[in-house]
Image 1 (tube, rainbow, N blue to C red):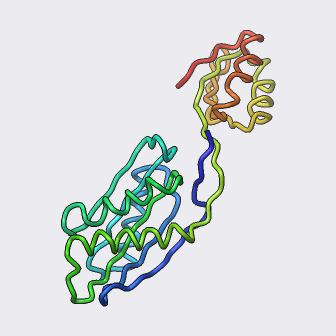
Image 2: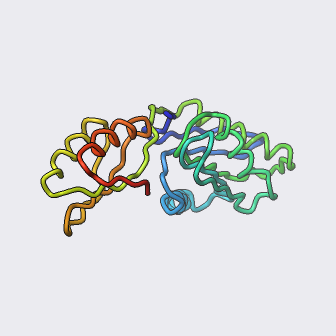
Image 3: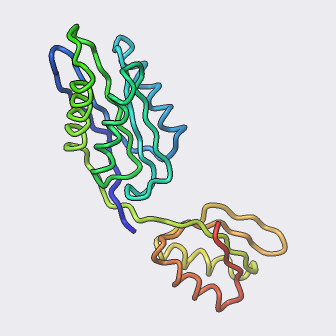
Length: 198
């Protein structure tokens, strides 16, 4: 299954009742990377009152990991609206952080929810994306003589060798497009290679 992923960071800004909402979007592939980027944005905007966020990792229709944070805003008024927008955009491996500079006028819970939704929508509207092919990790064990053959077929199918371990034979950890697994299994299985999912 293919899905869209961000190809470069995007940033937009909206002002609602004197509060500035700066929305930043970028590609992330792990919670650790998400928290690292959030930390960098907090350093970039140290005077901001809130740094609210949400992320979605993996295929947008069945994400492998999601997270959100209100950063001091009333519960459910920031992180959840950001995540709701992400859930309806069809983009995976994405994080949005909305930095708020308080303008002195309270927006209320409904106003905050709308503001964070609007800020997220604005940045997602300008975010550049490309199609990402869903991949699967498999392990292949083969004879030394077959290593170059395996590498050749993995590359031909749009995959890559992630790791090689040498012992009695060669054990390789591979990443290949999900749709190409049957072709690889057929090619390698006929040569006596042992294949298993990771």
